[in-house]
Image (tube, rainbow, N blue to C red; front, side, top):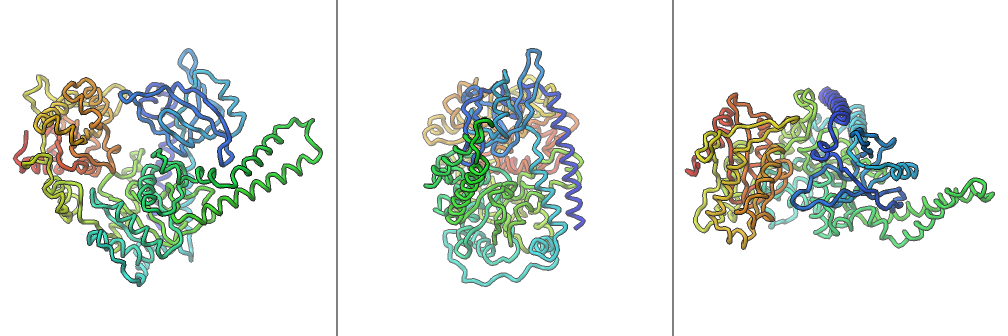
Length: 630
């Protein structure tokens, strides 16, 4: 109990810190800076407005079209709170007196839910309009409510699950069943699926990079549904929910996506609650009743009929009855309810309870967020890898206090008996895999036979290379990091140029035509956004790499989580006399970066700076052991 109380206190610190930081940045940051950070669209144009299938007033807003070369990434997604503003001639911002909620984003157009028709009129009256993310109290409120419920739980299933996390009492004896045969899975995957079916309280599926975590999870959901009517599948982010939902839908499992998807594909849209609701045969009749209600409501008082209130009440009752009937029919047809952890508290799911809850990418979710969904279940399965990206914590004090320690980590440390490690990886050449396996996974991973010696070249190509940028003969200046003005980030221009040179050299080594014909995909990763921006600029001007631009992705470590490429080039940036490496000390982040490649990993970094840290010194030595140090 003291651990949960401590977690709540740290969450309160994070809440206060983020709220204050948001207020300060809203006052100090200019519009252009907010746009660059992905927190603002400016200017925007107000488009059509209408009532959606759930009878909510929405409006479409759009920003100027972005080309592939200058597209600015953004953080707008379903459920985020936004606020509109207008900018006056002197650059001052005037905010609208209401907030709105993102309903849908596709390309350069966003659909936003407005509180009422007065807010729509206010929007049309504003000039030089922009929209930015607003501090969202909702998710924090849900997490605090969940923690309070867990802490105060007595003599119920939630209390039992809470105590099982602490290993008191011990987990109940597993259920007996006829073990399914799944020869298409490897032994560790089959063990995980069978134990998921058998467990009574909880299980953790620890899936290192390339070990088929999603495959295992989809198989487990399918097997559980042979024994249960419905399950809930959650994840921290909409992107993660969409990914597992696509895999389940591809298996033909009836699925309902609560909350709009980030992956805007026809296949995903077809599974959203809103689209299924609109496609119901009774929806046109419901829409007509709602339309009549709105017309009556807008009738001037002096023109209203004598039985106005009775008529409104009858229409509302009829609309509610029709909506509930449509919802119930959709729910009865559904086997999997998919949503984010916060989305599990959606009013649509009020009163629903599930025997089994699956939480994917659990290592990226705060413990409090997991309890939002666990409250709706009798048992739960966590899947992820706590040796990869952790949750994002903004408060330094909360981070030092341990807020980032996830429920998955707690179980891995306190309940190793409920953890199942997937041991066979299908992504990397064995020599690429070895360092990560030994440092993070006690050397327990093995490369599947089909990938063990994979290489782009017919002859063996050294898979792991470190280009030491400490003292480069190719450059007249030493490769040292810089800090851009008004930024906490880092950039290293010399290393950026060396990164592009390393890629050009590899292209010459393999052959441009072969890379194009075989559609070899390439990722360039840097932990720092400023370096990513510089690398993108250099790629645009690089004539040698121009034919390969569509095959090259340049982004941050976080953006590459869950992805893979044939070739990865990693620019570590940090180079200074003091040996400071900043948040490169978070080795889980680096683990993500070095495990994205299928065939080749080229690391660029200043050995003089980085090798003062044991991890990077061991990585540097691992590269030297391949006798391919450049």
